[in-house]
Length: 161
Length: 287
Image (cartoon, rainbow over the protein chains, first blue to last red):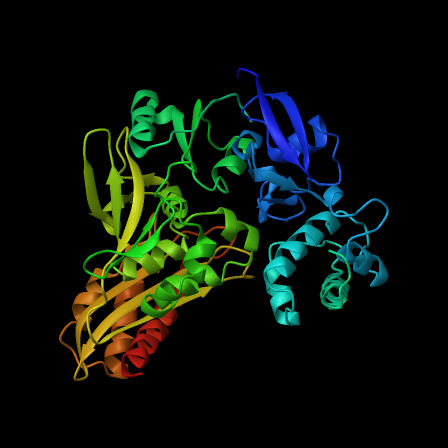
């Protein structure tokens, strides 16, 4: 259908994009803005790999129309690090060996961020439930949960969010 | 995804007008969690997408003058799950939502959107059948309220007419002496149910005064086991009576065989789950 100009806010930056209404948020990020950290795996809202935060709410970018998030704050994995300083969740995923093939990692970290923003001291069970919508086909769940617990602890001790 | 025209109405009136003008080619987008993947997979087509996310007043979860709880078409599953009123007053609706594993789905998706998909495997619809929910429907000219049973016509087919949309759900006050239970059978909790059962029973002095037994994933729509309900009415709820009611309920199902289960297994499990759900509902009356 007709292309139109739309304005987006992603990771604190403003973007002006010409797109069609059927463009999904994952297509906007990956193909229009070259923010390929957000992964598209199943593409139909089953796996959580494309999770980003929209006004702080964990959102499946593959099942969201880009046009519907105009003017909202979109946060992707690229927006977490401050320069070369990794976010505590990113550091914890590396330190805990929670990254195998890496395809689920961005979605896992964004979902974990949403969880820790609401609940800074989750139990292991709460982390498991919080990541219930994120699949890791390398099945490295134990280390992923370890990483989120470690990040929660680091952030509690004042590590920079 | 095929090309479509996109609208963001600001009032229910604007939305219903668009739906009326464009008819079946227009699809409502609430959370988008069902619509967008189905458009992408080509399972459905839309010439027009009507995004109702920016219509004010559809996100509420609140009591009306009679103390009945209503929630709007944009009330997200996560908000309904987190509502203490829902947890305390309608625990089976809370349970049906709580057991959904994907947190993202619950943040994005709406209960009304789930109902409008009209799948018989909806745990939310099954619990709302037992709770006697009514749907608030707005059209171009008027509004109506419809019991949830009437809303479901067939597989993926609702009673909505051209230009109509569901604006909310009304949950009646449970009568004194009500007990409820929700049970389902799943391969894993990330999957939809092979079969689900919700029961709401009013028991006074050991006698069943009212019964609503809903079964999901056992017919083209969620169904109420009306014969089993009629059998229970006025009876003392003994183990034998519950067993017989479960047998009658299983006989009312019309299950199919698919990748999740066989028709025969579904019918057998309907019997088991109805029995357990009625037992559990009766226990919650005493508590």
